[in-house]
Structure formats: C-alpha cells, structure tokens
Length: 383
Image 1 (cartoon, rainbow, N blue to C red):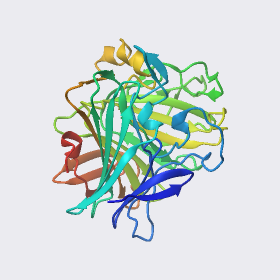
Image 2 (spheres, one colour):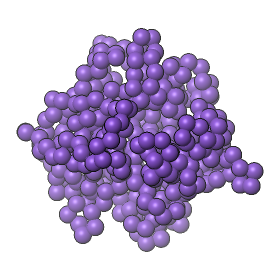
Image 3 (cartoon, rainbow, N blue to C red):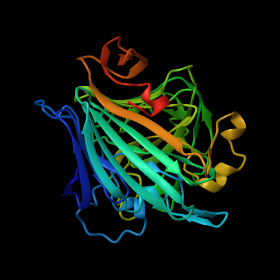
Image 4 (cartoon, rainbow, N blue to C red):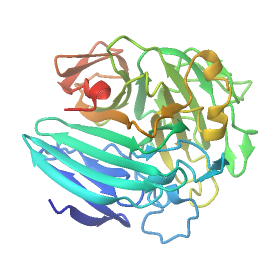
C-alpha cells in the first residue's frame, strides 16, 4: 500500500494508523513521533517528545539531532567515533540517515509499516517493522539486522515529554541488579553542560542516587522533572526473570496514564535514563529542553562502540555491553511500548506482570491498571 506521507514538524513522515493508534515515523532517522494512542477518545494520549528546534531552520551538524523526537533505533548506540576503520556518528546511521523502501500493509486486524536502510560504515541492512493491533494502545517494533558481523552496541531511545512541572512523571523499572551513574561524565560543568551527579558511582535504588552536593548527598531519580538546570545520565541493569520481559514505566501523574517499554533482558540488559532538565546550554539545546530518555540498550552507557567492546565497569559486573552480529544469520531486536490509562490515586509503578495477553501494573499506592499487551513479542518478534 502506498504510504501516507506528511510533513510533520519539519520532517517528512510516514503515518501508520488504525482506529486506536496513529504513528508518525520520520524518513530521516526513522524516529517515531508524534504517536497518538486512544485516538478516538475525548482525551487522546501522546507521550513522546519532539525537540523545540524543529521549524527553526537551524544548521545542525549532528545528524541525530536534526529530527530528534520520540523513539528511535540506535546502532551503534552511543557517542561518535572510529572503531576498526568504521566511522560512526552519534547513535549510528539508522538514527540520522534516510530510510527507504517504505511499505504499509493491513491484515487480520494488524497494520504494519516496514522501511529499510543500507548501512555504510559496516555494510549490511536494517529493516524496521512497526505494527499496531486493533483494540490495543501498543506499538510493536522489530529491527532485523542482516549482512553484518562482529560486535555492536544497539537499542531503543524512547524520549518522553515532561513539561515544566516538577515531579510530573513517576519513573520506575523492574527489579535491578544494580545501578550506576555515567562513568564518562566530566566535571560538574563541561562543554556547555551542568551535571548534578558524579561519575561512575554504583547505587541500588533509583530513589537514592549519589549527587555532587554535600548539602544533598543523594537524589530521587524516580521523580522527574527534578534538579532543574542539570542534565544527567544513569543506568540500571535488569535482574532477569525467567520467561518474563523486563519493563520500564513512566506515570504521567496529572494526566491519568502510564507509558511502558518492554524488552528481552538477555538482548537489551540495560536501561539508560537520560534526564535533560534545561542542563545543556550549547546550540541547539540552549537550556530550553526538558525531556527524559528511557533507553533500553546493550551498551556501556553512551560511551560508544569502542569502550563498549573493551573491559568496562558493566561487563566486569556481568552485564553484556555488545551484541554479537553474524553475517550469515540475521539478528532481530523486538521491542514493545505503549500506554495504559490509570485510575485516580495511581502513583509510581511498583510491580508488573504479563500473563495471558494482559499487562497488569500495580502502583506503590496499591492501585491497578491493566491493558491487552502481547508481551511474548519481546522473545519471538512475531504477533
């Protein structure tokens, strides 16, 4: 089917939609936003962030920043660099170059968008498939990597809007083995950025993360926006449960819904949390951005392919930081994300279960929210 093409916030975008969900995907970077869930209701939901410099016609040299919005696939995930003769931009070619071969199909209540990109630095192909199902407020993503071998960092970069009200989002994840602050961060102020958290310090709970401040030695990273004027990155390693997906969640407390992301922890063992609260002063950020990245990946933080391929503070603690690709066998990366309406009094997600096609989230206050979700997709990649 000929895709529906629209110019959305300065980017040519393809639109996949059914009666419940509308998904816009940029040609450049394959970025997913806006996404409207429960679109036929009186209060549709769009949880994703779109960068404020869209429509400003700025000259931006970093490809990933040009369309920056929503969720996108990174390969390699992390900083730019040259590794074994392969030169990469930040978050790799899939996040910054144009995708083509776009097609949309519909069959049996499932609407599907596919698009492809030919990787240049390490020759091969990435095929993106996004699927939505009638009656579900969920997007099922599948990235198939073909023709490439060797070690690679990769993952999803879901970026959520946060607004300006302190504590509007309540963030949580499934059980963790441990957490750590970004080991690659420089001094509290460096290169036009302010950082509230020290480099490379382990922690056991998102609610108590070490800071640079003697007067406030720890901070609650389940609360966002928080620490206005700072940008920080932390990561938590999933404690895997047999045959259960690992989850991340952000409750929009004033809007009555939660966003969730599900993945296979054997493939994407780490959740990197990027907390941007007006802490970047360089162009195009200009201290005007407030968003949170909940990024489920296999990488050594955002340090890039080189440091992730060597011994580092994560793989020495049992957390894989690269995926092994095989030229003769495709690697498939499935991911699930969506939203669930929450009842009055529902606060931070404390636990989640996934059985019989239903995702059930329980808040710290004891309230429950549930919705149809095909969670097995994170293991099979098939609906």
